[in-house]
Length: 300
Image (cartoon, rainbow, N blue to C red; front, side, top):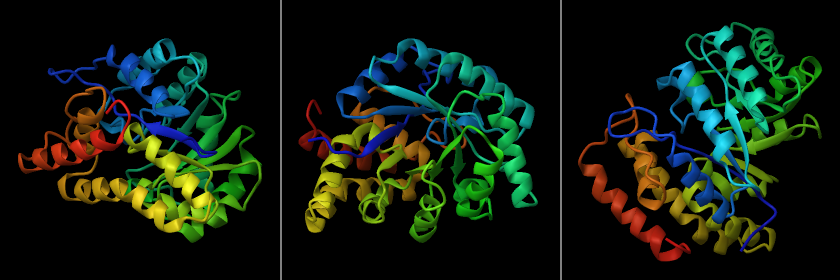
C-alpha cells in the first residue's frame, strides 16, 4: 500500500569490519529503499554518523550514492560542519555530484550567538550550491540550537535564494505547525519517526528519518489510515516505530538503530565511536524486533 506521504530514509553509512568505508554496500541500500516505497535517500546526516567522518569520507559517500543509486530514487545529503569552510566545501561538492537537495545544521559546538548569525552561517553554506534546494536541519537535541525554526525560516527565505525546506527533528508539534505556516515555498520534512501519526494530524506530508530504511511500507499504511480517519488503526500500524524508538533510547540511539537496520536490510556494519559497539544486552532485543519486522514486511 502506498500513500501520498513523501518518504526519505536517513541512511546509515556503511563501514566494514576494519571501520573503514564499505562503499559497495550503497548499491544494495539504494535497491532496498526503492523496493520498499522510499522516495529519497538522505545520506551523511545524524544516522549517517557525519561527526565521526572526515570530509574526504563524506565526499566519497556522496559520490558513491550519485553513481550507484537506482533510477527513480532521489538523494540528498547533509553538509553541516563545525567549520564553515568545510561545510561550504561539502556543499559545493554535493551540487557538483548532482544531489537533489542539501541540508545543514547550524554550528553545534557552541551555538550561534544570535538568530541572524545562525542564518548567516546557513546562507554562506547555501551559496556554494546555488542551484540546489537547501534545507535547514533543525535538531536541537543534538545541536543545542535555542532558535525557533519558524523564526529562522522567516529570515532565511528573505536571505537565501535557494532556501526550500526544513528537516524538523523535534517533538514540538506546535512549532512544527508554525514553521509550516511561514511560507508555501518551504517544505517541512518531519523527522521524529516515533511521532508520525501526530505529525500527520498536524498536516505533515513529507518525512525524513532513519526508521524508514525498514519501515517505509508501514509508514505508507499509517498515512493512508490517518487520511481515512482510522486513527486507531494508524496507531496499531505505527507501533513498531514506537517499539524501536523506546529500545534505541535504552541502548544508545544511533548505534542501536543501525544494528537493527542491519538485521532488516543491507548490513552497514557497526557504528563508529561514540555510538558503537553496542552492549551485549542489546542484541537479543534487536533480533526480537527484527523478527517482528520480517513477519509483517514483504521480502522480510
